[in-house]
Length: 278
Length: 312
Ligand SMILES: Nc1ncnc2c1ncn2[C@@H]1O[C@H](COP(=O)(O)OP(=O)(O)OP(=O)(O)O)[C@@H](O)[C@H]1O
Ligand SMILES: [Mg+2]
Image (cartoon, rainbow over all chains, first blue to last red; front, side, top):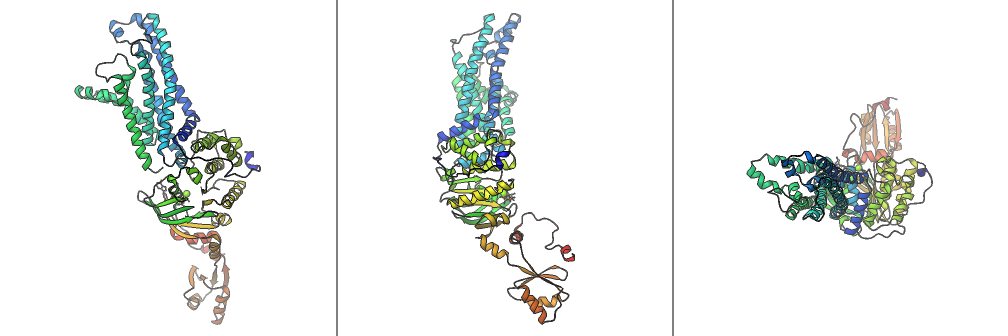
């Protein structure tokens, strides 16, 4: 690197730079810079988009082409929106992992020391990350679910098994899917901040979303039925479903329960963040 | 200004810093010395509030670091462990830190230029060499035009040109009236840059003195004497200010007397001397002497003097 060898101007420790106080706004802007300037963000968001749109289209294509051969029972269980949003089930892991990484990558690289040196009160960092990451997750997933809805329904219309955007509950479910993914990302952020390890955070998130429901399913059905609707992913699932199975929570109540999980994770993270050494 | 008052920090059973008290004044470079594991980096993390002490408190410019409105304007630190996301470019790293204090891009670009990272500013910091990493760390430390700077082994990994540059930088920062606190293992390095020294060992304060004072005490010499009648000579030179240590069979080192005095005493009593010489301790030796009892990690099997030296 030849630049090092050449004569440099002296470091101006002062200079014309105005230095202001740390504010929540400024920390949020800093978090936005951090989020947009690492490759893992672009990749995870791209993968999430691909999963939502790809799987949604795939499921619609399969149903549309197989429709004439399906039995009455299968036809009865088919729902145009559920097939259409199949990708959300996979995308939730991508956004959750990105949420975990938003904080654990700072610990694994040591960046957290620079971050907390600049913002020694620490909590503005957590809130800044939550706001910025939540906004980005929502901004990416909302167009994705609308795009896959229109493409998917166009495909299904080949067999006249599609529904329109004005169908009761559809708009709520589409917004709901984007909100669900957003909350999942925030849940990941909270778990990551508690565990401070990428592997630990991803394992915890995957465990809660994918492993916990089948385990609860093994319990006696009276127990299962009373716990099941309150599991994070089941509660949150209510908001993006329009003809729910019996025994699920009402859409907004379900979302509220799911958001409460994420809020609790973030609150625990906040308490620990204040107390722990870095 | 940094004030550390009765600070103790434990990690589990391990006491990293023990009832440590000292002050670092503005306007001069203060060196922070101690053997490996003596608690220098820990002390710096405590000052920044990155770790919390079990007892005592640390103040930066009169307040706990975290209570300042613009922390980066109060203190800028280059920490020991790298503190950069490996996937982010140097420019974005600095920009993200700058934005927390409303510091603009121009300042970021200025600093990149002046630490010599312009050509790599857009590259991932993960690919940086040790020296480039140090330069980036120094740039982040200076972002907020800090009144106090704290550098943990800044010359680590730098080439000779870089070492020169850091020395000048430290002195210039001090001459601008800032508080400059720099850790190092190398006494000789500190003798060149620092005006004051804080020396710790095993987390405890060993010395808090001016560099000149330290150098003066270091140049206290000893007299090396080899004689077949050592026992008799040792009896004769004994006194409250005099210490004698055996370094090899029939060789001793006498402290507290000059070689002239030892030679005269020997002559007066008809003692035969095979060797009489003044031993000048180097700064490093003086430093090692000072911290010998508090070494965290002794190198095994090293007697105080090499017997071989005597034979050759
Ligand atoms: N986070 C930590 N957890 C456990 N022990 C720690 C931690 N940080 C430091 N220590 C221990 O505290 C002691 C002091 O370490 P520290 O890194 O402060 O020393 P140092 O003077 O900076 O050493 P060096 O010159 O090698 O950089 C060491 O024994 C170290 O093992
Ligand atoms: Mg250290």
